Length: 59
Image 1 (cartoon, rainbow, N blue to C red):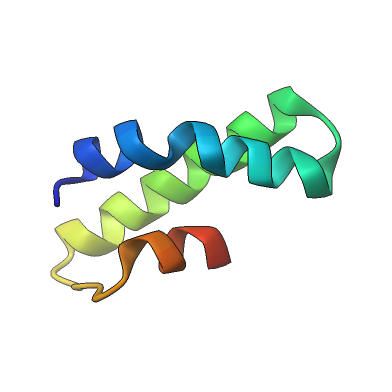
Image 2: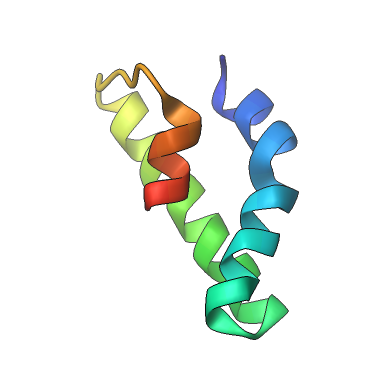
């Protein structure tokens, strides 16, 4: 699955998950976006993830 597909599928749910802990939607969106950027850098660097959804939630 491409990073774009992962983003489209999980961004909203990850934001809602993050806002539960952070308490602010804008900050939660920033955190989730940072996670996707770091995830993209890792996959561009050659790392592969068997469970990308789990990895994104744990970030």
